[in-house]
Image 1 (tube, rainbow over the protein chains, first blue to last red):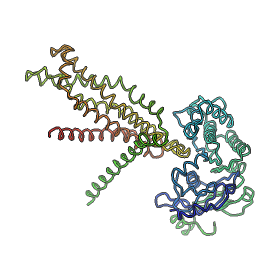
Image 2 (cartoon, each protein chain N blue to C red):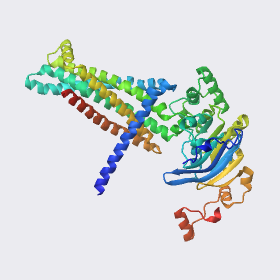
Image 3 (cartoon, each protein chain N blue to C red):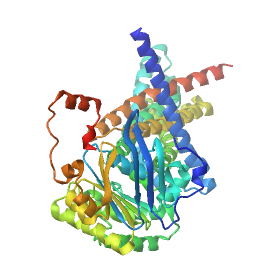
Image 4 (cartoon, helix red, strand yellow):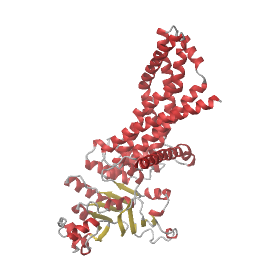
Length: 282
Length: 265
């Protein structure tokens, strides 16, 4: 578990330092380790894209960053506080400064779009109803959904659902926004619209943004920095241009969309069974 | 060897399940009865909304079923009582069986079918759609937000519905008494009032309260334990209904036994 209580007092960075610092993060599902000691930082106001194939652990990493999974080891510092080691009440306080947009949107199906966006404001602030109404209209306007307050989530198209989910994530004016596969399942035009919206939010509010995706075009469009995850390890970490130039075989394979080679020799087969990677791929 | 292992495993799983229900109930009770006094927010609006769908909209079906059950009790009772020449006791038979046993039980069965299954389906769907995760990332705890209002609504509405069901059952029995057993409505009601004691009503209401708690706990627990995929929602809904019926009958037995043995001394 998390090692010392004393580490909690000595914040490693001032508040205007990196928004997120992840140190040696390990996450288990049962006895299976999904993330094997991950290290990276997200500077304030920058957009980090976490790339990786299916089963690379990228969704687990995102779920851990927002506190839906507890790490089995390591530290997550968010705005100078060790997110993983704090009490549930402290974590909830910090969560109010974070927004998360889920892959499916995760809008509450029993509430209208407006009520969805208003929910965190009703629950966490003492603003009166008319102020909240104005704020809901504002947030929906920011994501291009003006006039959709009274619609039910089921009446919206896929792209509109994502936009509404982003509006809800923005409701509490978060300092950090997390996106899980923002363009998954959308046609290219709608997906481009979501990318544009993310860029617009970043420019307008200087929000720190973390995006998990496997869509390369969208990743290079929105990212300042990228990390590539493979089987629970970071194989590349750098700015988007650094990643583009990288000659690392695993990075090239991912970026150039080269399928996994056929398993030929007995050694390969053995490695597949034991789950260990050949050392030359690292 | 394998047989004893199976029994042991089933016992442990059963105990763990009941433990889980108790924990959920405790958390929800904390959110309803303690948190509001410590500056927490009670989801009163949601509780009222739930109370409407659990209680008010169930009135027609609860009325109809209880009326029929009261009538059936009267017919069945009259069959035996007539042979003993004690047909006038049919009012007592209906009144006591309805208030002590069948009023709470039939209400619970209707509530399981309408609300227990709906709780499991609602929470299960929210789980599948990542809505439960979304609540957590918005710093909203699922139990106080989703479960506590359901508990509050059920703790109030199931006893209310049960009282109504008792009344309808008595009317059902009365309709037989008046048409076929020589009662007038006034004599039937008087016979009923003489037959039941406050203790009978109380036993029924205590049971109804406990049934409400059990149905909510099982429904919500099954919802939260929904796996991935929409077919899982169907599974948890079915499972909520079956487990609720079993646990309601088990709780019924326990309370009936407690009342029997405490009354004997």
